Amino acid sequence: MRAQALLLLCVLLLQAPGGQHSQKTNHLKAKACTKRPTEFTCGNHCSYFQHCPQNTICCSTFCGNICMNVL
Image (tube, rainbow, N blue to C red; front, top):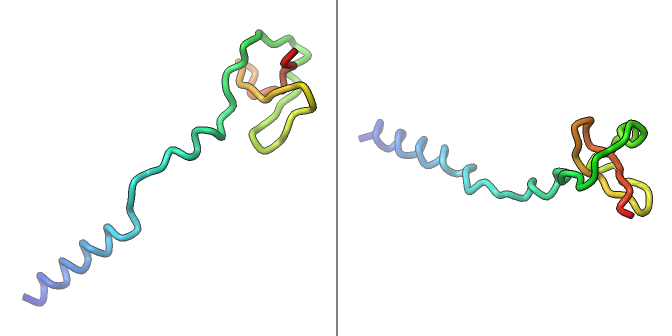
């Protein structure tokens, strides 16, 4: 009986920190660029946390995440 109670306690404790995985990290990824980058723009790397200059956005290309002009 004591072993069963200990086993039940262990099972309940293993489930305690769990939970449904939230999809909150999806918005942190850069979206794909709509235009093809030039060699010059491939040098303007960015990330979600490093903001791009005004009138540019951080988007994903074959040369990494870059700041690309939206105009």
